[in-house]
Length: 430
Image 1 (cartoon, rainbow, N blue to C red):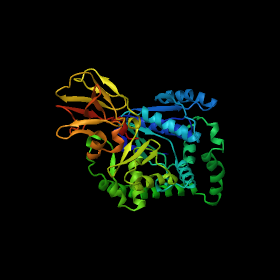
Image 2 (spheres, helix red, strand yellow; image 1 turned 45 degrees about the vertical axis):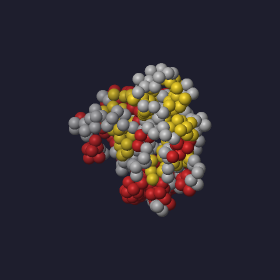
Image 3 (cartoon, rainbow, N blue to C red; image 1 turned 135 degrees about the vertical axis):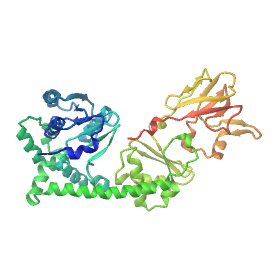
Image 4 (cartoon, helix red, strand yellow; image 1 turned 45 degrees about the horizontal axis):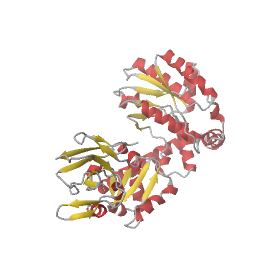
């Protein structure tokens, strides 16, 4: 008998448990086990989520199958239709769409339970090993991780597929078989059907041994993460521009680490923000780190960019990568929303006349008390405003006269201040 209760006790007080139900053997067994467990113990409310990718005709019948299964067990079912973005790997595209839908469906604190088992873990380790993954990748699938506003838990990772099949036979229930699971053109299917049978002939416990190796590698990754946290604490010095609300690190501290520790710290830091680059693309970090002082280096990653400024590296994403547009300001007594660039508010004595917000085009100048008219570029240089910020710093104009620069009290031509609340969507973590 497969006993899930000890594995799930850390989440007994979660608002709800959600089962990722494909209709296949693994998720069907998981749902059955949880439904039975709910009759024996006081558990969080249970529901199921089925993701319909629409990639093959056979899949059209699976939501109805899952509905019948859930009705028999007294479990609510939510069917979500997703669109798989075409790309180099259909498997990866489907996975990305599936987990994005799960993350969107989870409410705060809820637990998503998935049915990956021991053979899945072994296949994942071997697949990533053949692709040249590092320790983080070879840790394979974690038993739990944050997902959206909740957490993803894999309670069957130490259970064999044979045990799941035996349970299904004993309960005499049906499950669906995905026709694509037999297509060895897909890498995982090739490993499952062509490689593992050969390995088992020589090493009967290959799946168990590989899964245990993944556990060892996960422990090693945990130690590397602890080292990364310590290094990042040293690199998280004050930036001097707290109002930017941007994640940044002290470049001098990072340079003081060995190249391997630099990569380890950055992998930990970036993992919350973007999909990590593979070993071939870390040259982008070296170019950013080693660029000359007068350059504006940038390392473009999947979900954002790393920029350099004031001997720091800064993470930019979402709105920070879009060019803002100028606009009029009819009522300066009210907060002004800037599409894609946060919002503005004026304080102090309100300037008279028609006002507008614009952004740097080059050649701007500002009248400074006691200093006369000064070139804006030179003034920003004196204040050491990072280069990537300057193109989106809101500028307050009356006709063609520059009156103030947002968040820089030194650059105001009157008894008023322009307060900029920067875009916050850029800092949402993955």
